[in-house]
Amino acid sequence: MFSDPDIEYHDDINKHGGRVRSFRHERGNWASYAYAVFHPREEFLEMLEEVMSVARKHGIILNKMEEFHISLSQTVILRHHWINPFVQSIKERLCSVNRFLCVADQLKVYVNKEKTRSFLGLEVVTGHQQLLEIVSEVDKSLQEFNLETFYQNPSFHVSLAWCVGDVTKSFQGACLQELQKVLDEFEDSDLLTRFSAEEICCKCGNKVMSFSLQ
Ligand code: AMP
Image (cartoon, rainbow, N blue to C red; front, side, top):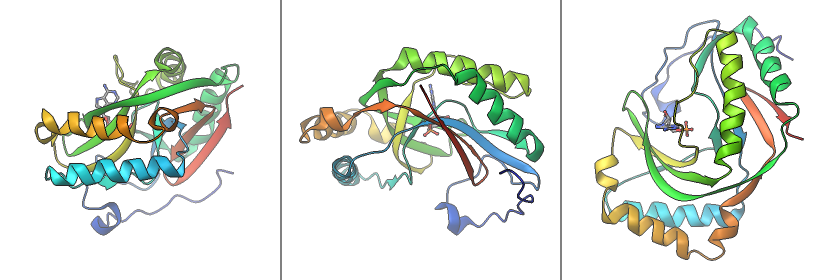
């Protein structure tokens, strides 16, 4: 399963929408992170299109995320031969965790540590405690491999869309409030923003390994 040869990476700016990489790709190093999967309904994507179009009216041009998830770790660098034991370690720690309800319906702006990318996300309001418990287990696996643990006070969220640079100021005031209103008033928005967290994934380079919660 993990027997692919190391991938040689080329940093082609066209392939990542002009965003600035936090890590230089190096042969044998795999950018990796853990997350809980969110499979949106079709109507959720329509709601997002509407939110993005209102953001555009405020001069903020956003790119929709390619997939939707709740991060449970930061992006860390794993050597190829660590991937298998690292994923196994997380899997073992989470094997008895039950699936749980998540509600993520509060729009919030996030910026990466390097302040090179901004994200419009939906903050988790229900499910925070269970996510904290999962993160404390994932953190133990990270520590086992001498890797950086997650935020001390995480704000769990589903990133919806992103743009280059730190645009927190552009969202301030009326803009974010207006976007929240679009979301709240969208038909069935309360259904679209609640889901059962049941699948945990580790993405290492271009490989995704997943397992189910109980
Ligand atoms: P994600 O879509 O999970 O990768 O999150 C988008 C960005 O939010 C990441 O670059 C995180 O570094 C950033 N972020 C900023 N503050 C926080 C926080 N308190 N908790 C979680 N992520 C955060």
